[in-house]
Image (tube, rainbow, N blue to C red; front, side, top):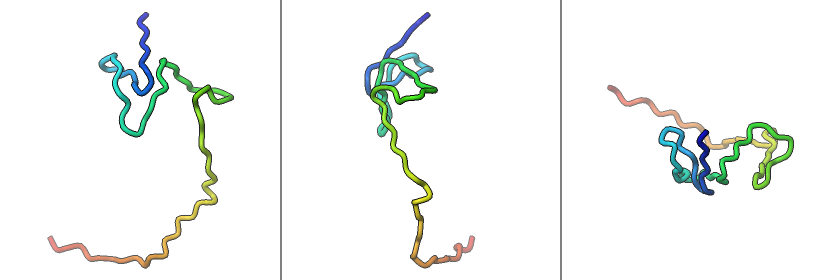
Length: 71
């Protein structure tokens, strides 16, 4: 059985089976840990919660309708 471990900031590309840098805006803790189900957050993980019912998406700007240009 082969095992792989990529360092922090890299992920394992399954197609090439090599470590590659994470895309901009994403991050990997490295070490090959995969968490699919847990009751407490694993070390190094955090979560942000928000109440969607408190979010209001009001737009007070009057709508503008523009005709499509003729083809």
